[in-house]
Amino acid sequence: MKNITTRDLTYGAIFVCLMTIGANITVWFPFLAIPIAGVTVPLSLQTFFAICAGLFLGRRLALLSLTAYTLIGVAGVPVFAKMHAGFFTLFDYTGGFIFGFICVAFVTGWLIEKQTQLTLGYTLFVAIIGVLVNYFVGINYMYIAMNTWLGLSIDYSIAWTSMLPFFLKDIALSVVAAFVIVKMLKRLPQAILLQRRMQSKN
Image (cartoon, rainbow, N blue to C red; front, side, top):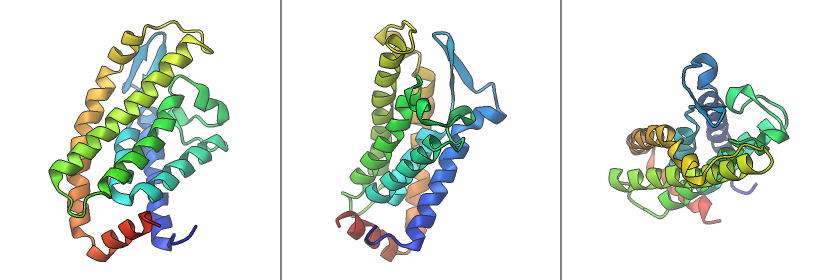
């Protein structure tokens, strides 16, 4: 695509790798999973890395990176949670969160590009918006999936309250993401930040 540099591809590839690692924390630490309605939902760092992608890469490159991550998993590479892969993973009860990560990357990237001067307060606001976007998409998808093609009956209120531990975890991690990204961007050459914003407008 136009204006995509080698550095951009490298940054995007790094976040694909980080998403893969973040998705499979429970592979190495099985206790980081919570049973819900007869199934087990893994605790992951994917929301954290999706937010970081948006904050660091901007909307266009973050969107491309998270879309690439999803397509790699759909193609059969085990990059999704529990080392799963394949097209039908998208139709599982957590499939909505995969779509949610793409939305998170785009929304946080779009919001962060609206500021010429990044502050911790605004970056934290954007990160929290990213968490809300992810859970809105993911939980609504999970509720529909469980009550339709998966045949698992669950109340809408239970779908939300059961995800509270994950939500609180991701809110806490959004604070970490804001601190890390603000510190990181302040150390980068200003030209990199200007180029990122100019590319997002093309």
